[in-house]
Length: 397
Image 1 (tube, rainbow, N blue to C red):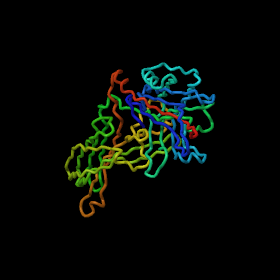
Image 2 (cartoon, rainbow, N blue to C red; image 1 turned 180 degrees about the horizontal axis):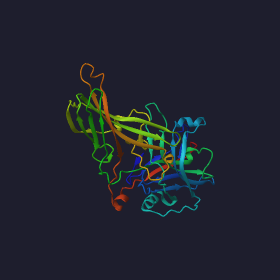
Image 3 (cartoon, rainbow, N blue to C red; image 1 turned 135 degrees about the vertical axis):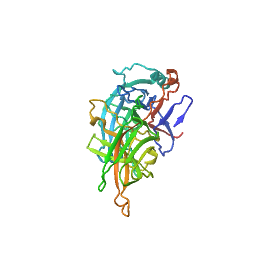
Image 4 (spheres, rainbow, N blue to C red; image 1 turned 90 degrees about the vertical axis):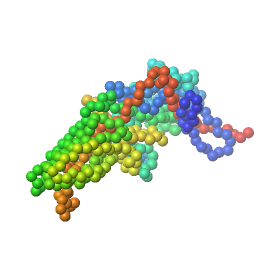
């Protein structure tokens, strides 16, 4: 990766050949994108605008295509080589760029910027992402897992072939690809009233109950922000509440290939609050669920991860009315559980302790970035360039 004055990020494919002589790199394809994150605005999704630089020399009469694919990987990539495939395409689309076909996109400022980078051999393209496709989600691999992580990803790929959808596997030197992300931001109305739950529980040998009420200040929270859980307790019994435990559970529903639904705890925090018999309690308990505290948990759902970049816990899946759940691949939700540990007192108090529990739905999302002017956005464009380099050998003189 190299950075130059125009902020071009360059990633190149090449082979390290241990042969005598000089290697001459002849660039055949170069893929340019202006960004890696494309926002799902619920009613529409940002279009993918890019450019492919094509050197007609040495194409051998073949064609050049560009493809956008949304796929779900649910198994280790290294097992693909034994004839098994653990990748299922949810949606894909091909465009022929060379020789020129029917695709003639309306040029945008992003296209103009990328075409300046590519020069006369640049060919612009645009993909419109359907609104019913899932957002990018990665399932966190274990410490010993290798290869691509499982989850839903989007890939832009340009390649040299005779047909748009070749049956045989393409040679890496004839392709250039970039993983991009489809993401959602929290809606503007994040200050809506939060959820509330309450319970009244009676105990054996006690004619009066414990009242527990828990609530959140707002409906939506941003990743990394502290969450105040408001807890109110009215203890009318002769028992003592010895502590309060708050947990946050992430539920991942893999609906694409099976009814696989599992829950992982991303936060468990105990508060040493004692509530005596016939007394009340009213306090806000602050928690902050973070990926940094869950790095070793295999299968935890994360927001789609780009190579060598960190991410966060997966955002809640926001579904539109009438959407097919199976197309979404992975559904993510959260809930907060508030537990009161109630002791009976006496010599067996700890052994006969029971709990009082309520659950609250939690929505975690990323904040919408600040708007910038058109001039500022053009100045901040970060063209991403990925090239293929077939290798040729030149004899020593």
